[in-house]
Length: 120
Image (tube, rainbow, N blue to C red; front, side, top):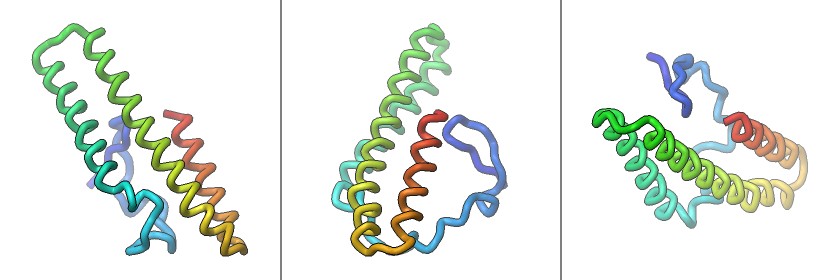
């Protein structure tokens, strides 16, 4: 089984993905307080993507479709920035309070996430 990333590119099976690490599981993350709002926002973005499929199916003018692609991309980027902010305020700040090597790990995770966002 293969996976598809945000650009639609096919990748390796999920087992080839980086290990989620010890911080994943049933822990409460920074986005927890806004979870319902985030899910609502993601459902709206999902609707935008379905709308793109409909536009292609209906043979809508390519520039009009590209305009909608741009709007969908901006919506995802905005969501990602909000999630990143919550990660910094919660996960990174919590690691800073605890001290030790965990702060370096959390900062590195955030740096890598930012780098991935910049590549998109």
